Length: 355
Image (cartoon, rainbow, N blue to C red; front, side, top):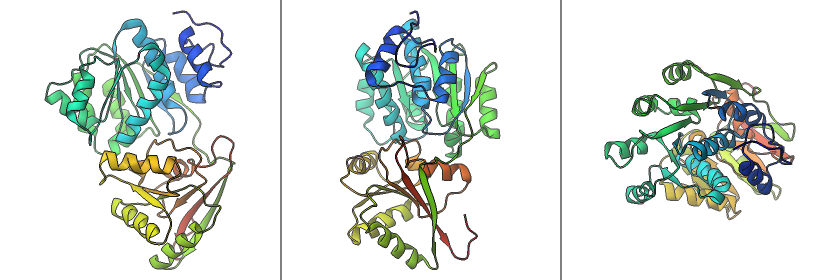
């Protein structure tokens, strides 16, 4: 497949005519920085260590080369990532591009029927998209095999390691063929990520996009409070204002997020919550309700919301402060997208220094 010129803006990246045509028809006109840098390297079959934040277009950065490689070599693709929601989101993005030429995927995540997943595996998918634990379940039950994998993607590697998947990832890497292409993406390059990369890849290209900064389209401010009760009262008062159309609220703990959504509902503010204690169907229903504007507020932990693409968020509220600057930028980056204005507020106790 020989690349051609295209009006899509993805020309010159080494993509095949069919992919360029699909991108053009789908309205993808200008590649993001990570796509611009990663795609030409990946289509050559080279290993990549990509440093890029969530929301920078990584799915197509690895997805397009993967689709092209699979079409050429008839190999199997494997995408491993930390959360169920992110797996479903990546699957949706890949199917959006690949369904026109018969792409078949199998999503292996916890909280869903093993039997249903087995049926999808028996369809001989081109790409398996999985969270580490459920993929290992299938390997141990011999319902999945990785010996035909020719291209591996590890997405959100730092988050997977933070969530305690280190042993699982090492187990999976050991089960894969030595001869393969590996694309690893991470928001940060920590020591544990470096150790993982050293184990997986010997020669690779490092690609790093700019350090995260807040969009100029986002208005940022703090909300000060004295007591926990006052903190909640202030949030309720804020959300009774009409301009708070679609609000994503971040909390620190699973129980705290659940209590917060219940308190908002009791005060007449339609709200849902997503966190690790909810089943996959419950989390998906809550997310769908928020996306379709059936509820105004979605309360979430960082882990549950990692990597989710939620359009048209008018406000982000840090009800509990994030642990670091990168998480702060990641959170508030859910608003002020596509040239729209957004607002981000962080609750700060009067006994705590300004964030």
